[in-house]
Image (cartoon, rainbow, N blue to C red; front, top):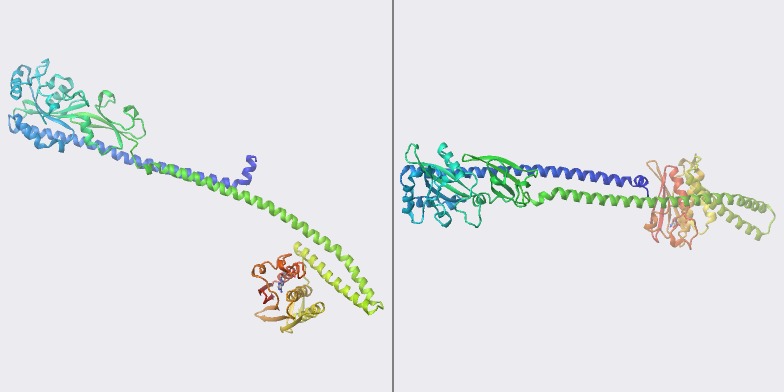
Length: 559
Ligand code: ADP
């Protein structure tokens, strides 16, 4: 089938498909946009919170240093034991996870290094100052807590000797504020689990007016430990943290990426890029959602809508396509049946007309013969022949009527007449043909004048009387009852015959319908009731039936 003719026949199904698919597409786009908007908002909140946590926590760490600074303000000399007690009191591991250690360093002229060396010797003979002594000052680490193998490696190290540490120290001296280094490799690092680190310095003074810097207290951080502890609840975002504002591996101090380890991956549509100022240095924070972000169900919702929508659209298309196909087939069948019906009607009409003429001439011949002087036996035979010709003429008349009804050409010639007289005439004429039964009048309204087609009404009544007789072979009587109430005339023809089954009662007015079980026993064509019903309908009335099998039937003409 060509596309054009396909569309012509199946356009309702195609329209349904297009409409449903469009609706599905719309719903999918809406759901996707909605999901995107919600995700964006949620992500923004999360990313902002990450920045907030880091910023706040770094402020907390500065506060620790201020506490340490106050300790040195209150007592000029703090021994290693006192420092240990103080730091233990802070419960760093529990309250400030991520701090590798809290260190104290001296700030002295390089020429005074022997003084610090003495101090170090006092602690343990093993420690000595490690410095190239290239600068006029040295900042050697004196104490560090908690005291462990890793931290011990820092004691005696001249913080001033390394550029990044030196920068932060200088800044701390200038600003008198907490100051962090850029990314460094801590002295504490061994070969295993090497992490970027940084230090946060705050000066301590030898006088209470904070003019002479005596040294520094410092927080020591290993960034993976620190950020891991801070952000362990934020597994659904990836993040990169850079010291400074340049995005380069050199400045990357912390990275958490689920999918890939490169910061180049940060090209997705959802990226939160912000700069925090942490203890005097800018830190650039980049957050992006990873594959754990958002609930799986929510993420799949738009796709589910799309899938279900497409499946439903296709299903409904198939259903309506099949429906149209089936109807098309039924339509073709119906047309075939109608064509056959038409041929049959034409045949009946032609055959009846052809039969009518010779039959009229037979009837005329019989009538002529009846006038002749015949023997009794011949007269009897002739009467019988005349009777059968009458029956044949009635039958042909019925067939012609059927054709007329079909063509909508059943004409009525109306006049006023007494209905009671018509009923009596019918009883008489039927009585001539069927002598087996007596038609008894139960009620009759003698002077009721009716305006209608007398001949056609007689035809309908005769048919009902004949049926009542035909279909009550076991009884001898048929009754007629006439009534008038509120301008409605009811004529009932009652028999005590074989009755009609419930199933058949609906079809008895159909053309050519006969109860199958009767066909071989009682003759008939199944057209009488159809014609009678049509005649009564044309008079604005109706025929109703009540019947019980083997009890009898009541046909009521309502006019
Ligand atoms: P016909 O009598 O020639 O078969 P009708 O159109 O007059 O055709 O009747 C149609 C069918 O209705 C009959 O074949 C018969 O089965 C049923 N029928 C009609 N009148 C009666 C009746 N009084 N009692 C029982 N069955 C009847």
